[in-house]
Image (tube, rainbow, N blue to C red; front, side):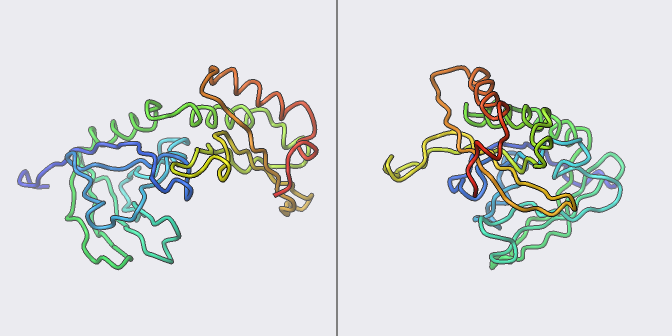
Length: 237
């Protein structure tokens, strides 16, 4: 690599989307030298959700290796096949991380220029963002902790079920209270037959409050689910 190449700084910023109904979790937006350059070429796109940053480092959306990897870096609130998405190829080369070979499958054909990062700064920022909880509202913390508690319990497997997901349910702004669900956490699981075939799906719609400690609420909600066969206490979807 030549010293003439400009080396950019990556900053990952958690942001709860305005249209969070498509994905209630915060997106993790990449800022390049402090600028949201992706917004200029794919303004309707959402960055990948923070729920994709919970596994091992090699599974994180922006993780890089020596082999080039094509990544959908923003997507629409519908589907990439419907309204297009923004893709970039990422790779680790020497002491740098390179983003290039951009592709915009939406109506806007503009794409960012090739971007070069210092690999040490890049990898440190990925690790920092994966561990960052400062963005969380109480309902996010409740959903994260409840999911961890339920997954570690093995309770659903006891009843021939699989935990599908746990996510926050936010109050919708500018919507009359009688027309929207109150803030809380949704827990979805499904029943599995012996052959591994998915059958019925179930859901808990749990209420949370901002007046009580989150950890106390999570213990109470988990106890409610773990006290009996969940197929009896949840609602069919």
